[in-house]
Image (cartoon, rainbow, N blue to C red; front, side, top):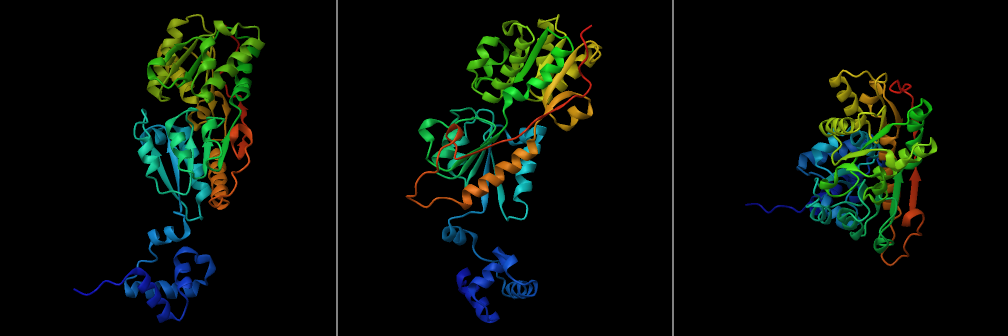
Length: 379
């Protein structure tokens, strides 16, 4: 059996044959913009004749200490990430930012119970992490920060665990959820509504805690995005003279159509006097629209409904909602992570300065109200 040549020997032989440096051959694969189209074509043609597949990516990673991949930590199953339209828009933004950069995405779905999160994150061969919407003390966030790699948190938590600060360059991308939801609720109160209910998704880690939630308990929720949106609803109710403790809140652990529909039914059956429902996601609001249709109720004549997200089906159905820039979040997160990776500190260098919530960088994006047509005066 003939001896197999190592890739480095083949690369060197290829360079000698063509009368160029080994770096030039490597650039034909890794940095084509540094070569003329004619020279790159010549190198690749010679490589094909020799059966040379290109530089060994493992060896390159060892040499450069870069993998060319980023890990996106998702707290749900992978299937959910592609069913939830807000998540789809976010991932599209991450992919958009990476276009033309030769950066690949490593999706790390933790599943609903998160049991495999630590192993997935510990074994991920990536240059850094984007952690998408987790609780403040989530093991997945601690595992990512514990790797010492650049990390960008999207949405939540809004501040890093103090024990993890300074361990790695970290950034934050999100919105101000509490004030962001208020314009939609203001549409309800200005129309004259005072009997308003709230539908929210996951407030607490344990699924057993879904269902009715006392307004006084919302402040202690584990997930601050939903907590702040519910509190924003209550803020606007209070401003309109409505006692926040009188506002019924129902939550569901999973943000999907089936859970949205069941939550809507529970809220409406338990509170027959409601004239409006403010939802913290568009999926929840669409569930209310579906439940109203099943009951023969006209929206907004019988019940007014508002949402939050600005996903396409909600806009197409005329929902009054808050539009958040989900795709822009993905772009901003990927670009911020690329900057942190590019400026990664050498071993022994000082930790990056802490700013908002212990993050080295933070970017807050704007939201807007889509008036829609799902709000009218109570009858």
